[in-house]
Image 1 (cartoon, one colour):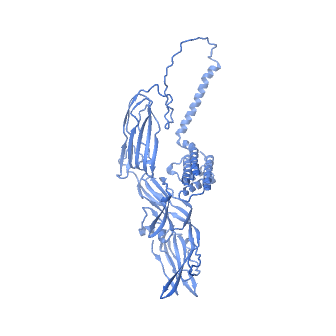
Image 2 (tube, rainbow, N blue to C red):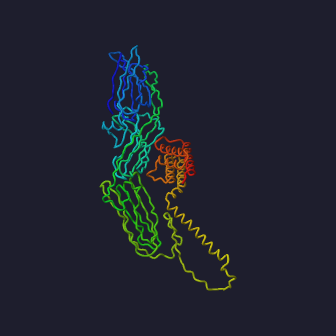
Image 3 (cartoon, rainbow, N blue to C red):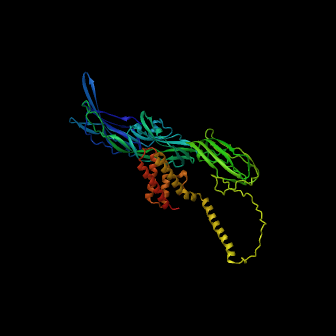
Length: 598
């Protein structure tokens, strides 16, 4: 930040000084401070019309005693400060203030403050200490005691390349609590919040030579979904600060020793936005099977057996390890023989941050004897180290399938994979006619043409038609992914709320809030068919309004979301508050089930 304006007026060792930064940015909060020595007067009202007063006046006093040539000299100091923010850009002057002392008028100096666009002053100063390519408020350099900085691990990335955004609160010991906040929404990114451990959140940092206590509010892994510049919007946070009011009491030695009385002040702290440059992935050398995997990976594969009998299950295991957007890419695809029964792959993920392992199991069942070839499956990715595409391949497999055993278990079921009909063996399919004690009887009547005859044909036909209609309807509904998600939304939400209730009863507050939040996000995403990449509060609110959901229900839903998000970095709530939040979440989901129009 620029230098300080400072002049001094004096009268019999009485001085009156006004100090303020010479250059500030729009939206920046800064301090102006009047200092009076050897007097405790009532000063005239300062002319601060060109700035918004966020806090103040706050007062503090101090006193000291010096011994010179055997005699004592006492000096007092009174400080009166304001926290301001600019209303508009330009150059403005704070005119002198004054007070009366021994019949004379003592005046302070005037100061001139230049207000520049946000970010301009920091660029001119070239101060990037600790910024890690991120945006930071320069209020610290102006003497501000609290501000928020957002840092990014990278400012230029490829599509699908991960970067980490960290939002940190900087303060100097006077933040009591966080009252409200609006965190930036990362539109254009797939985002995954990192679960911060409480012991990792506090810390210290030095900004422009000033030491601050820090607290990580939020840390998020981002994966850009498009190329070009992506704007990250601004946010803000409302904090309750503790500031001195200037009250005092007499010290032990009879001097005006200062024990400041404190008061609570509400302050809005801006969270600066920024721009991320996203480079398009190169088209040259891009494999046909490339599916947006970006990072560095390895792949292994194996098969349970290559010598089996017909109707015996085979499992192919594929393991992909590495770092990148592994969680969000599609699994490799095998080309199995047409007369094999295949089932949806079963996956197991162990991913922390952007690194980990995905294990995929492919279940197949050969129905006929013979020798079969399963070609290798491929997995292509863009390597960030070499800036080139790589293709990994699984093993290819040759299966020798023998004729199945007719005496096999007649009710064998392949579990955990299938939505298909269970595989059953018919067993012995020939039954011999019993030729002993055969008696032939004459028919008692002719069934042809009777009512029973026609019902014998009509009833099965009607049942067949009804089943066919229901079956076609089921197929149509299953093909409509949005409809399937809509139907399962409430069931999945209840399942998560049940898990949240378990955490509630065991006193695991962090896990409780996390599970309630997942229940709400998952429910609304499935119910409104909103893709994960577009799932944010603004989109949800707009969609609910479009579907004629009541304003009260929308507000309640948003408030519960905010409470859950805030609870991750605020002090734990009481058991009563958690019980109340649980009931509110269940209630709002019930209301949305009634009000959302499909």
